[in-house]
Amino acid sequence: MVAYESRYCKRHQDLAMDEPKPKRDYSRYNQVTRHKDENKSNQYAFYRTRQWVHLRQQALERDHYVCQYCKLSGVVTPAKIVDHLVPVEADQRLAIKLDNLAVVCPSCHTKKTHWEQRWYGTGQDNTLRSVRPINDVKTINKMMSDV
Image 1 (cartoon, rainbow, N blue to C red):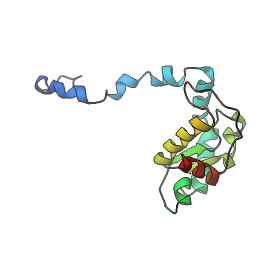
Image 2 (spheres, rainbow, N blue to C red):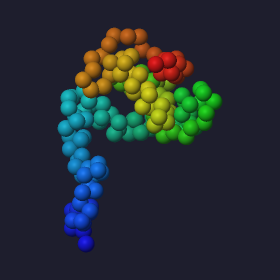
Image 3 (cartoon, rainbow, N blue to C red):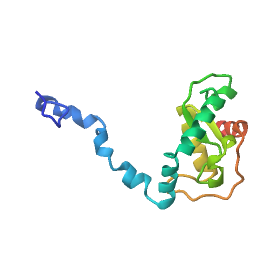
Image 4 (cartoon, one colour):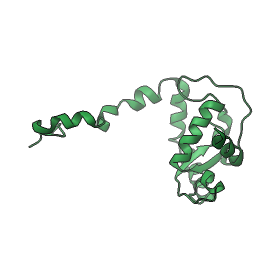
């Protein structure tokens, strides 16, 4: 028998050390990490608005739920992530512009996030850089691939 809060019996308790902590241990993520400063708090609140939900749906339908970066390579990858070409941190005015959105797969989204951190200086503990905004999927894809 396993105790209610445990995942393993006493005999196999040492296996628990190898696993990541259950989600309940991360319950303060949104209160502490995401809302670390007012700017991040406002950004997170934006993604919970009706306006964003509607805009996101328009982008998904326009791009037919296909990753726009993979598509440039001739690969059709189903995707549900809607990403800002020019990040909101770099220019908040573009947050609600449909032509600043692209549907991306998780793999391309990760690559683009790393690229944004280098190009724009976005992300935690980074300083925003004054660089020209790039809102063209082809150009971003090329720059992501070059690195």
